[in-house]
Length: 260
Image (cartoon, helix red, strand yellow):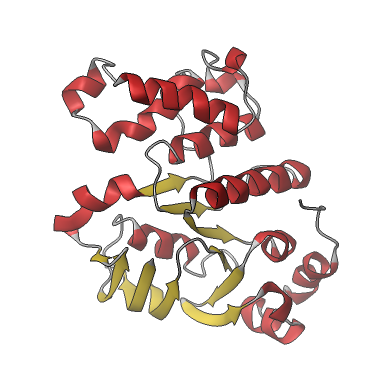
């Protein structure tokens, strides 16, 4: 479903964000990209949705190469969930969710609010699916809690039934209990729709609890690729280095929230 082949990203200032990353994520897998800040996680996700162009290498989604000319075809098939929610806080939850349909309608219709009835119905269905009631439809997102806002973000990401969901540190702004709830919701919604998830995290305990597979980055390179139970202390040392290893181990050894 997602094919990443020898991808390098070097920025104009000389910073190397990715250095020869290659892997394949099959359909329906919940794959976590793990690593500390600056390891290349966000850059990797942005190459998949075309926001960053690799210096060298190639990325394909569903067999279609990600490049400028294919983005209009690919964008409706890729949903995005952001670290800081990426919502328009002065607008209602319903308006934010239905905006997920923008890649499929004209700018003129969107500017006038002329969304098709099927998208309006889908908005209500998704609100219910992420655990928000009818009373939240007209509530401005700035008046909602962080957990509720990220539920809105998840609903928006699924608006066009994408085959791929990219989640960039989706729980970084949430407390541990709400983080587990949001990741459980994301996993369950993706599974019910057959969507592939590529989710960046830095919390080891959450990666172990929710991932089907963990790919860890260090210095822009893949330093681990395997099942969560294969992630060892030696792998953690390589991912996080010697200095922060004690902090990493506290996450690694802490029992995760129970998951259903």
